[in-house]
Amino acid sequence: MRTPFTELTGVEHPLVAFNRSPAVVVEASRAGALGVLAATAYTPAELDAQLSWIEQQLDGAPYGVDLLVPQRKVDVDTTRLVESLRAQIPQQHLDFVAALMAKYDIPPLPAGRRLHDGTATDASVVPELLKVCFAHDIRLIANALGTPPPEMLEPAKESGIPVASLVGKPQHAERQLAMGVDILVAQGYEAGGHTGDIATMILTPEIVDMAGDVPVLAAGGIASGRQLAAALALGAAGGWAGSVWLSTAEDVANAVIKDKFLAATSSDTERNKTRTGKPARQLLSTWHAEWAASDAPPTLPMPLQPMLTVEAWERIDAAAEQGHPGAVELESFFIGQVVGSFTRIRPTRDVVRDLIESCEQRLREMSGLIGLH
Ligand SMILES: Cc1cc2nc3c(=O)[nH]c(=O)nc-3n(C[C@H](O)[C@H](O)[C@H](O)COP(=O)(O)O)c2cc1C
Image (cartoon, rainbow, N blue to C red):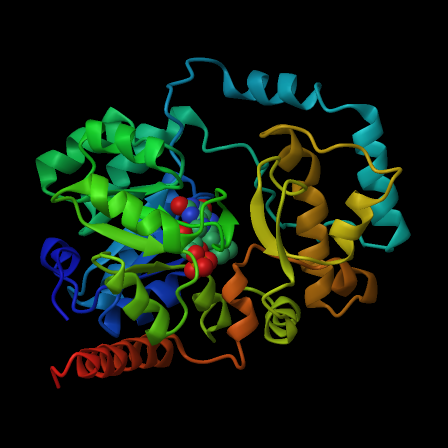
Protein backbone atom coordinates (compact mmCIF):
# COMPACT_ATOMS: atom_id res chain seq x y z
CA MET A 1 0.00 0.00 0.00
CA ARG A 2 1.36 3.39 -1.02
CA THR A 3 -0.12 6.54 0.50
CA PRO A 4 1.10 10.14 0.98
CA PHE A 5 2.11 9.05 4.51
CA THR A 6 4.32 6.17 3.34
CA GLU A 7 5.86 8.51 0.75
CA LEU A 8 6.60 11.20 3.35
CA THR A 9 8.14 8.93 5.99
CA GLY A 10 9.61 6.13 3.90
CA VAL A 11 7.71 3.55 5.93
CA GLU A 12 6.56 0.34 4.24
CA HIS A 13 2.99 0.17 5.62
CA PRO A 14 0.57 3.04 6.36
CA LEU A 15 0.43 2.15 10.06
CA VAL A 16 1.83 3.80 13.19
CA ALA A 17 2.54 1.85 16.37
CA PHE A 18 2.42 4.36 19.23
CA ASN A 19 3.81 2.84 22.45
CA ARG A 20 6.01 3.63 25.46
CA SER A 21 7.95 0.34 25.26
CA PRO A 22 11.13 0.65 23.15
CA ALA A 23 10.87 -3.07 22.24
CA VAL A 24 7.39 -2.55 20.74
CA VAL A 25 8.72 0.38 18.68
CA VAL A 26 11.58 -1.77 17.38
CA GLU A 27 9.43 -4.78 16.52
CA ALA A 28 6.76 -2.66 14.84
CA SER A 29 9.31 -0.80 12.71
CA ARG A 30 11.08 -4.04 11.82
CA ALA A 31 7.74 -5.40 10.63
CA GLY A 32 7.28 -2.40 8.32
CA ALA A 33 5.03 -0.14 10.43
CA LEU A 34 6.28 3.15 11.92
CA GLY A 35 7.07 2.59 15.59
CA VAL A 36 6.63 5.85 17.54
CA LEU A 37 8.09 6.02 21.04
CA ALA A 38 5.88 7.76 23.61
CA ALA A 39 8.66 9.64 25.35
CA THR A 40 6.74 11.72 27.87
CA ALA A 41 8.55 10.75 31.06
CA TYR A 42 12.22 10.65 30.06
CA THR A 43 15.14 12.84 31.08
CA PRO A 44 17.34 13.88 28.12
CA ALA A 45 20.00 11.26 29.07
CA GLU A 46 17.39 8.50 29.29
CA LEU A 47 15.85 9.52 25.96
CA ASP A 48 19.29 9.53 24.33
CA ALA A 49 19.97 6.00 25.63
CA GLN A 50 16.58 4.70 24.47
CA LEU A 51 16.83 6.20 20.98
CA SER A 52 20.39 4.88 20.60
CA TRP A 53 19.21 1.40 21.60
CA ILE A 54 16.26 1.54 19.18
CA GLU A 55 18.52 2.59 16.31
CA GLN A 56 21.00 -0.18 16.99
CA GLN A 57 18.19 -2.72 16.73
CA LEU A 58 16.60 -1.15 13.66
CA ASP A 59 19.45 -0.93 11.22
CA GLY A 60 17.96 2.00 9.31
CA ALA A 61 14.25 1.12 9.47
CA PRO A 62 12.19 4.27 10.14
CA TYR A 63 10.82 5.14 13.60
CA GLY A 64 9.55 8.26 15.36
CA VAL A 65 9.18 9.99 18.74
CA ASP A 66 6.21 11.57 20.51
CA LEU A 67 7.08 14.21 23.12
CA LEU A 68 4.94 16.15 25.54
CA VAL A 69 6.13 19.69 24.99
CA PRO A 70 4.33 22.55 26.69
CA GLN A 71 3.49 25.41 24.34
CA ARG A 72 4.72 28.27 26.45
CA LYS A 73 8.21 28.49 27.83
CA VAL A 74 7.92 28.76 31.59
CA ASP A 75 10.81 30.83 32.78
CA VAL A 76 10.58 30.01 36.47
CA ASP A 77 12.34 27.92 39.06
CA THR A 78 10.61 24.57 38.44
CA THR A 79 11.25 23.22 41.94
CA ARG A 80 9.45 26.21 43.41
CA LEU A 81 6.68 25.90 40.83
CA VAL A 82 6.09 22.24 41.74
CA GLU A 83 6.12 23.10 45.44
CA SER A 84 3.57 25.88 44.99
CA LEU A 85 1.35 23.59 42.89
CA ARG A 86 1.58 20.86 45.53
CA ALA A 87 0.44 23.36 48.16
CA GLN A 88 -2.76 23.89 46.14
CA ILE A 89 -3.91 20.28 46.61
CA PRO A 90 -6.67 20.39 49.26
CA GLN A 91 -6.22 18.28 52.40
CA GLN A 92 -9.57 16.57 51.67
CA HIS A 93 -8.09 15.14 48.46
CA LEU A 94 -4.86 14.00 50.14
CA ASP A 95 -6.93 12.29 52.86
CA PHE A 96 -9.18 10.59 50.30
CA VAL A 97 -6.26 9.04 48.41
CA ALA A 98 -4.54 8.00 51.67
CA ALA A 99 -7.77 6.36 52.88
CA LEU A 100 -8.13 4.54 49.55
CA MET A 101 -4.60 3.16 49.82
CA ALA A 102 -5.32 2.06 53.41
CA LYS A 103 -8.71 0.49 52.55
CA TYR A 104 -7.11 -1.72 49.86
CA ASP A 105 -4.00 -2.27 51.99
CA ILE A 106 -1.64 -1.03 49.24
CA PRO A 107 2.00 -1.28 50.38
CA PRO A 108 4.32 1.77 50.21
CA LEU A 109 6.40 2.40 47.12
CA PRO A 110 9.25 -0.13 46.79
CA ALA A 111 12.68 1.41 47.49
CA GLY A 112 14.42 2.77 44.41
CA ARG A 113 11.25 3.13 42.31
CA ARG A 114 11.49 6.52 40.66
CA LEU A 115 8.42 8.67 40.82
CA HIS A 116 7.46 10.72 37.78
CA ASP A 117 5.66 13.52 39.52
CA GLY A 118 2.83 13.76 37.02
CA THR A 119 3.48 17.31 35.92
CA ALA A 120 3.99 17.94 32.20
CA THR A 121 7.54 17.84 30.91
CA ASP A 122 9.63 20.42 32.75
CA ALA A 123 9.85 23.30 30.25
CA SER A 124 13.51 23.91 31.09
CA VAL A 125 14.57 20.48 29.72
CA VAL A 126 12.56 20.78 26.50
CA PRO A 127 15.45 22.23 24.42
CA GLU A 128 17.67 19.34 25.61
CA LEU A 129 15.01 16.73 24.79
CA LEU A 130 14.53 18.22 21.33
CA LYS A 131 18.30 18.32 20.78
CA VAL A 132 18.46 14.61 21.61
CA CYS A 133 15.63 13.84 19.17
CA PHE A 134 17.18 15.78 16.30
CA ALA A 135 20.61 14.24 16.91
CA HIS A 136 19.04 10.84 16.15
CA ASP A 137 17.78 9.38 12.91
CA ILE A 138 14.06 9.88 13.61
CA ARG A 139 11.61 10.04 10.67
CA LEU A 140 8.74 11.67 12.51
CA ILE A 141 8.29 13.81 15.60
CA ALA A 142 4.91 14.32 17.25
CA ASN A 143 3.72 16.60 20.00
CA ALA A 144 1.22 15.13 22.43
CA LEU A 145 0.14 18.48 23.82
CA GLY A 146 -1.52 20.92 21.44
CA THR A 147 0.23 22.92 18.76
CA PRO A 148 3.91 22.04 18.34
CA PRO A 149 6.04 24.98 19.53
CA PRO A 150 8.55 26.73 17.20
CA GLU A 151 11.42 24.96 19.07
CA MET A 152 10.06 21.73 17.60
CA LEU A 153 8.89 22.98 14.20
CA GLU A 154 11.95 24.98 13.17
CA PRO A 155 14.68 22.33 13.61
CA ALA A 156 12.31 19.71 12.18
CA LYS A 157 11.86 21.79 9.01
CA GLU A 158 15.63 22.31 8.78
CA SER A 159 16.30 18.57 9.09
CA GLY A 160 13.38 17.56 6.85
CA ILE A 161 11.69 15.57 9.63
CA PRO A 162 7.88 15.54 9.38
CA VAL A 163 6.03 16.95 12.41
CA ALA A 164 2.76 15.23 13.35
CA SER A 165 0.11 16.65 15.60
CA LEU A 166 -2.94 15.07 17.24
CA VAL A 167 -6.27 16.82 16.75
CA GLY A 168 -9.67 16.06 18.27
CA LYS A 169 -11.77 18.66 16.47
CA PRO A 170 -11.66 20.84 13.35
CA GLN A 171 -10.67 23.98 15.32
CA HIS A 172 -7.48 22.21 16.47
CA ALA A 173 -6.66 21.30 12.88
CA GLU A 174 -7.08 24.89 11.72
CA ARG A 175 -4.41 26.01 14.19
CA GLN A 176 -2.03 23.15 13.39
CA LEU A 177 -2.30 23.71 9.64
CA ALA A 178 -1.60 27.42 10.14
CA MET A 179 1.54 26.48 12.10
CA GLY A 180 2.73 24.29 9.20
CA VAL A 181 2.53 20.75 10.63
CA ASP A 182 3.25 18.01 8.09
CA ILE A 183 0.86 15.27 9.28
CA LEU A 184 -2.43 15.57 11.16
CA VAL A 185 -3.59 12.72 13.39
CA ALA A 186 -7.38 12.82 13.69
CA GLN A 187 -7.95 11.18 17.03
CA GLY A 188 -11.53 10.16 17.78
CA TYR A 189 -13.56 9.63 20.93
CA GLU A 190 -13.04 5.86 21.05
CA ALA A 191 -9.24 6.20 21.43
CA GLY A 192 -7.29 5.32 24.55
CA GLY A 193 -5.75 8.16 26.58
CA HIS A 194 -6.72 11.85 26.39
CA THR A 195 -9.37 12.22 23.77
CA GLY A 196 -12.18 14.51 22.67
CA ASP A 197 -15.83 13.71 22.06
CA ILE A 198 -16.06 13.34 18.27
CA ALA A 199 -15.94 9.78 16.92
CA THR A 200 -13.22 8.75 14.45
CA MET A 201 -15.87 8.00 11.79
CA ILE A 202 -17.02 11.65 11.89
CA LEU A 203 -13.74 13.40 12.66
CA THR A 204 -11.50 11.77 10.03
CA PRO A 205 -13.36 12.97 6.91
CA GLU A 206 -13.87 16.40 8.50
CA ILE A 207 -10.11 16.77 8.99
CA VAL A 208 -9.28 15.23 5.59
CA ASP A 209 -11.50 17.84 3.93
CA MET A 210 -9.62 20.67 5.66
CA ALA A 211 -6.11 19.31 5.26
CA GLY A 212 -5.52 19.68 1.49
CA ASP A 213 -2.16 18.09 0.70
CA VAL A 214 -1.30 17.44 4.34
CA PRO A 215 -1.68 13.69 5.01
CA VAL A 216 -4.16 12.75 7.74
CA LEU A 217 -3.86 9.60 9.85
CA ALA A 218 -6.95 8.25 11.59
CA ALA A 219 -6.55 7.36 15.27
CA GLY A 220 -9.01 5.79 17.66
CA GLY A 221 -10.54 2.39 17.06
CA ILE A 222 -7.90 0.83 14.80
CA ALA A 223 -6.90 -2.64 15.94
CA SER A 224 -7.74 -4.78 12.89
CA GLY A 225 -7.30 -4.77 9.13
CA ARG A 226 -10.98 -4.00 8.64
CA GLN A 227 -10.63 -0.90 10.81
CA LEU A 228 -7.49 0.22 8.96
CA ALA A 229 -9.31 -0.29 5.64
CA ALA A 230 -12.17 1.83 7.02
CA ALA A 231 -9.69 4.60 7.89
CA LEU A 232 -8.36 4.54 4.32
CA ALA A 233 -11.94 4.59 3.03
CA LEU A 234 -12.53 7.78 5.06
CA GLY A 235 -9.67 9.42 3.17
CA ALA A 236 -6.93 8.90 5.74
CA ALA A 237 -3.39 8.19 4.52
CA GLY A 238 -3.01 5.53 7.22
CA GLY A 239 -3.82 4.57 10.77
CA TRP A 240 -2.24 5.70 14.07
CA ALA A 241 -2.89 2.92 16.60
CA GLY A 242 -2.17 2.98 20.34
CA SER A 243 -4.29 0.50 22.28
CA VAL A 244 -3.66 -2.60 20.19
CA TRP A 245 0.06 -2.60 21.11
CA LEU A 246 -0.88 -3.06 24.77
CA SER A 247 -1.92 -6.59 23.79
CA THR A 248 1.62 -7.45 22.65
CA ALA A 249 4.25 -9.58 24.37
CA GLU A 250 6.81 -6.74 24.16
CA ASP A 251 4.63 -4.12 25.90
CA VAL A 252 5.94 -3.32 29.38
CA ALA A 253 2.55 -3.32 31.15
CA ASN A 254 2.26 -5.91 33.92
CA ALA A 255 0.50 -9.27 33.45
CA VAL A 256 -2.41 -8.25 35.71
CA ILE A 257 -3.47 -5.33 33.52
CA LYS A 258 -2.89 -7.36 30.34
CA ASP A 259 -5.22 -10.07 31.73
CA LYS A 260 -7.80 -7.41 32.55
CA PHE A 261 -7.58 -6.15 28.96
CA LEU A 262 -8.15 -9.65 27.59
CA ALA A 263 -11.25 -10.05 29.78
CA ALA A 264 -12.68 -6.58 29.01
CA THR A 265 -15.53 -5.75 26.64
CA SER A 266 -15.87 -2.61 24.56
CA SER A 267 -18.16 -1.19 27.29
CA ASP A 268 -15.50 -1.42 30.00
CA THR A 269 -13.68 1.87 29.29
CA GLU A 270 -14.61 5.44 30.13
CA ARG A 271 -13.29 8.94 29.51
CA ASN A 272 -12.52 9.75 33.10
CA LYS A 273 -10.72 12.62 34.88
CA THR A 274 -9.55 10.79 38.01
CA ARG A 275 -5.99 10.11 36.78
CA THR A 276 -4.95 13.27 34.99
CA GLY A 277 -7.65 15.87 35.61
CA LYS A 278 -8.64 15.78 31.90
CA PRO A 279 -10.93 13.26 30.19
CA ALA A 280 -8.70 10.29 29.33
CA ARG A 281 -10.10 6.94 28.22
CA GLN A 282 -9.10 4.10 30.52
CA LEU A 283 -10.22 0.70 31.73
CA LEU A 284 -12.80 0.94 34.50
CA SER A 285 -11.89 -0.65 37.83
CA THR A 286 -12.70 -0.34 41.53
CA TRP A 287 -10.56 2.84 41.52
CA HIS A 288 -13.22 4.59 39.41
CA ALA A 289 -16.09 3.22 41.52
CA GLU A 290 -14.40 4.71 44.62
CA TRP A 291 -14.02 8.14 42.97
CA ALA A 292 -17.69 8.00 41.85
CA ALA A 293 -18.91 7.41 45.43
CA SER A 294 -20.94 10.20 47.03
CA ASP A 295 -18.26 10.96 49.66
CA ALA A 296 -15.45 11.25 47.06
CA PRO A 297 -14.07 14.72 46.31
CA PRO A 298 -14.38 16.22 42.82
CA THR A 299 -11.33 15.76 40.62
CA LEU A 300 -8.77 18.58 40.47
CA PRO A 301 -7.61 20.27 37.25
CA MET A 302 -4.41 19.21 35.49
CA PRO A 303 -1.63 19.15 36.75
CA LEU A 304 -2.95 18.89 40.34
CA GLN A 305 -4.89 15.63 39.84
CA PRO A 306 -1.88 13.71 38.43
CA MET A 307 0.31 15.16 41.20
CA LEU A 308 -2.25 13.90 43.71
CA THR A 309 -2.57 10.40 42.25
CA VAL A 310 0.79 9.55 40.67
CA GLU A 311 2.33 7.92 43.73
CA ALA A 312 -0.86 5.95 44.40
CA TRP A 313 -0.69 4.59 40.84
CA GLU A 314 2.99 3.67 41.19
CA ARG A 315 2.09 1.80 44.38
CA ILE A 316 -0.90 0.06 42.78
CA ASP A 317 1.15 -1.01 39.72
CA ALA A 318 4.03 -2.31 41.85
CA ALA A 319 1.73 -4.24 44.20
CA ALA A 320 -0.44 -5.60 41.36
CA GLU A 321 2.72 -7.01 39.77
CA GLN A 322 3.19 -9.01 42.99
CA GLY A 323 -0.43 -10.27 42.83
CA HIS A 324 -1.58 -8.15 45.80
CA PRO A 325 -5.41 -8.60 45.85
CA GLY A 326 -6.32 -4.98 46.65
CA ALA A 327 -4.01 -3.67 43.95
CA VAL A 328 -5.34 -6.18 41.43
CA GLU A 329 -8.84 -4.86 42.11
CA LEU A 330 -7.82 -1.21 41.62
CA GLU A 331 -5.45 -1.78 38.69
CA SER A 332 -6.28 0.08 35.47
CA PHE A 333 -4.54 1.79 32.55
CA PHE A 334 -5.32 3.99 29.55
CA ILE A 335 -6.95 1.96 26.78
CA GLY A 336 -9.46 2.53 23.98
CA GLN A 337 -12.76 0.86 23.19
CA VAL A 338 -10.96 -1.63 20.90
CA VAL A 339 -9.94 -3.44 24.11
CA GLY A 340 -13.12 -5.50 23.64
CA SER A 341 -11.54 -7.16 20.59
CA PHE A 342 -8.39 -8.40 22.37
CA THR A 343 -8.32 -12.19 22.60
CA ARG A 344 -4.67 -13.02 23.28
CA ILE A 345 -1.21 -11.55 23.85
CA ARG A 346 0.80 -11.74 20.61
CA PRO A 347 4.22 -10.71 19.33
CA THR A 348 4.14 -7.15 17.94
CA ARG A 349 5.34 -8.37 14.55
CA ASP A 350 2.31 -10.72 14.27
CA VAL A 351 -0.07 -7.86 15.09
CA VAL A 352 1.48 -5.71 12.32
CA ARG A 353 1.44 -8.56 9.80
CA ASP A 354 -2.18 -9.56 10.52
CA LEU A 355 -3.36 -5.97 10.43
CA ILE A 356 -1.71 -5.25 7.10
CA GLU A 357 -2.62 -8.56 5.44
CA SER A 358 -6.25 -8.40 6.51
CA CYS A 359 -6.48 -4.73 5.48
CA GLU A 360 -5.21 -5.60 2.00
CA GLN A 361 -7.63 -8.53 1.85
CA ARG A 362 -10.53 -6.27 2.83
CA LEU A 363 -9.54 -3.68 0.21
CA ARG A 364 -9.51 -6.41 -2.46
CA GLU A 365 -12.94 -7.59 -1.33
CA MET A 366 -14.22 -4.03 -1.45
CA SER A 367 -12.96 -3.47 -4.98
CA GLY A 368 -14.83 -6.68 -5.85
CA LEU A 369 -18.01 -4.91 -4.75
CA ILE A 370 -17.70 -2.67 -7.80
CA GLY A 371 -16.35 -5.37 -10.10
CA LEU A 372 -12.65 -4.40 -9.86
CA HIS A 373 -11.13 -7.69 -8.81
C1 LIG B 1 -1.77 3.89 27.07
C2 LIG B 1 -1.92 5.06 26.15
C3 LIG B 1 -1.17 6.21 26.39
C4 LIG B 1 -1.26 7.30 25.51
N1 LIG B 1 -0.46 8.38 25.73
C5 LIG B 1 -0.37 9.32 24.78
C6 LIG B 1 0.65 10.32 24.85
O1 LIG B 1 1.41 10.40 25.80
N2 LIG B 1 0.76 11.17 23.81
C7 LIG B 1 -0.06 11.10 22.72
O2 LIG B 1 0.12 11.87 21.79
N3 LIG B 1 -1.06 10.20 22.65
C8 LIG B 1 -1.21 9.29 23.63
N4 LIG B 1 -2.17 8.30 23.49
C9 LIG B 1 -3.07 8.29 22.34
C10 LIG B 1 -2.42 7.58 21.14
O3 LIG B 1 -1.41 8.41 20.58
C11 LIG B 1 -3.43 7.26 20.04
O4 LIG B 1 -3.94 8.45 19.47
C12 LIG B 1 -4.61 6.41 20.46
O5 LIG B 1 -4.18 5.35 21.26
C13 LIG B 1 -5.33 5.88 19.23
O6 LIG B 1 -6.52 5.22 19.54
P1 LIG B 1 -6.59 3.66 19.99
O7 LIG B 1 -6.24 3.70 21.43
O8 LIG B 1 -8.01 3.29 19.73
O9 LIG B 1 -5.61 2.91 19.15
C14 LIG B 1 -2.14 7.23 24.40
C15 LIG B 1 -2.90 6.09 24.19
C16 LIG B 1 -2.82 5.00 25.05
C17 LIG B 1 -3.66 3.77 24.78
